[in-house]
Length: 358
Image (cartoon, rainbow, N blue to C red):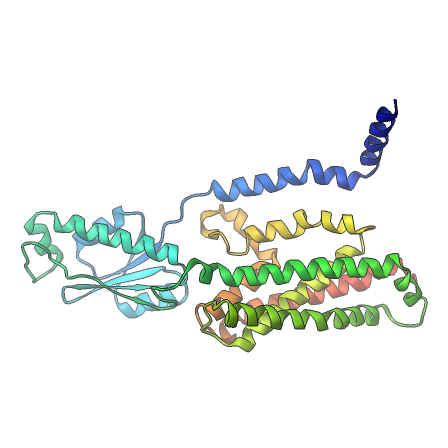
């Protein structure tokens, strides 16, 4: 009977806590559905530009696991490569194929090089007539092309997967930890009565929010400096751009997490309820941060990434750390992060109304 009484009490406790019940029953279904949509998407096919290639070679590349498109000159192909519309382009210099890789993704680089190599080997085993057609005026009975030369727009052949994922991981940990600490810290301000005593003074709600943001923001800045320094100087993560610009991105991403954490904590009654927000707020952002290729997702699903702060932070970090781009190429990401922080701050001011009516 005592065990039965304990079981009934736990059941009643769960049934009264609708948020916990929804988290246990619905959140896993949402996350699993999201994972299913992401990983059941199409296999990514690298986009390769062909600059005036002989038709037999172009035909073989088109039959490989590549999406090929023709370009009239190397300049136009290079411009498309810089805009990330291509993953690589191929041109023939004499009898030597020259492959220019975008270079920021080692896995994509390997796929492209392997497919081009297979296409050339297939062509070498073809008839002498087809070989001579491929090499134009050059005739060679065994092999029409020399060994291809490879160059990288960004990165290098020594680039590792960690260099590719590293910027996303920096953004994720900065965002996650600041969100968690800000949410729990602001909750303690409420549960300890500090916030109620504060709002009873003549101080404005906007000043309260600004004070909390600046107060927590100091430690956010310290964290941004520490994380970026450790990643670059200690772990040796690839870094081709400005370190100060990387600090600015990390700070803005942390500021977004800070203001979002404070905002959502206003609707939580305990630390446990803050933890409940993680599967809803943090986990989906990981899927849309660039850790997985967004091009393999359904078009309607890609639009979800546009509302994820981590997407903009990770994109800006990759552009700075791997591609070495400056502020003129990442200003949109920075503007969105700053804009989201302002929006969350305004919403925080509005949310404080329930603590002070006047």
